[in-house]
Image (cartoon, rainbow, N blue to C red; front, side, top):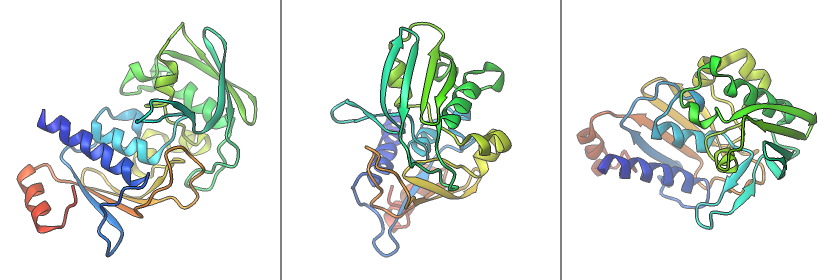
Length: 243
């Protein structure tokens, strides 16, 4: 129970950093965080831990966003959507969004991401997050349709949560391993350093679009993997960790 509460608190704190709360060290505008569990892969589709969810929400975006207070669904990478029939959703995409590497977000990225993760042969870690999708097709550069395998009432909820959009050209070349070492998303934070099992550094993305997540108010997030809880507590008391 204590572990679950702590992980939930970490998730909330880093997301809060992107929406206005400020617990960072004022001297260098950095939030210092410890993870207990080592991530098997930073790629959000190839890990299933709460720590992975923390990074996923900070680094990547979905088509839709659910406000955690009102529970209202809002457009994020999509500006609007409609059900064409019971198993087809059409999305109008937000124009002008850029990935952290400077590439444009378009329908090609949605089609590639959905078709890749929905294919069981590609081995997404948590299949229930993606196996309800059949495929995606491009209507034009900023219109896309996602086809479901069958009726799935939770589709919008999943599209506002674990289904993140990846840059098609980069991911096609880098794959999960490359994305895990050099993550590229559209989210409020970009990853500047990954030392597997040890260290993750995030920096506020200055080019972040007008997302309902809000723009970061803390510039840097420094995450270290410290498996020993006693060591974490000692660093909290010494001031080298914020959480």
